Image (cartoon, rainbow, N blue to C red; front, side, top):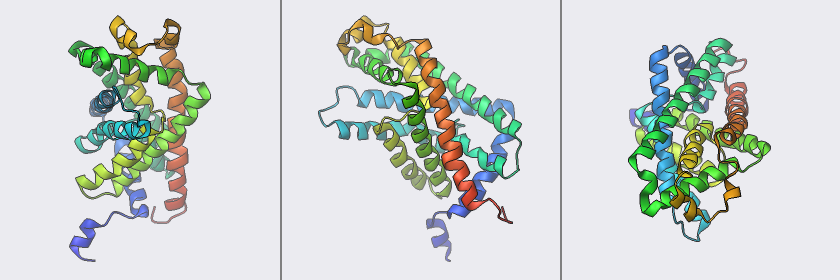
Length: 282
């Protein structure tokens, strides 16, 4: 194979599996401070994508499906930043299970990474919520951005626990497949295209991502403090019953568990069995 062909061709699935396993070892052994900072960056990056989505979904046309597609493409910004600019994202790091299943890291190392990255992602998202509030972003378009943030937050807390869990499974299955395709890519352009379709798909289909929800639900709560934004939603006061911090936590837990199952079991362990289990060269 020529050098050009090697450059243009994606890595094969078996090569990607080995790459993910090796990267999993590296991620599991990353020192505390760099890991926490990269996780905070990732939380902020996902928040940027959610802000972009909020703008795009303000006053959407009657073409509901097309509007959701456009919003999903905008939301992909956050994941593109994580992949290209660097960041440690809890949902993508669910693929570290390949290194654990292959015996390269311990369960303690796995849980340490997940715990620190989850915490860092949360800190990055919460800090961005505060900065968005301080910036006056929610007052944009005559408070319409705030009204959109409220509606997006409500959509995430007004679902059942079962729906939250299953939507979390679907979401992180697509996120981890996007990560898998990124690892198969050789160029920045490849990586961007690998991200856009699965990420825009999960957003357009209404699936739930725990880190995105760490930004979008608190942002909706903050926006609901603005009477003008509330009035623009056209909703009765009782409609806001679940848009609280307790409502946020109540739905965050099943979404997180669904994300773990979708990313670690549905994608990670399935691909481990296919490409690494029982292989002498694994």
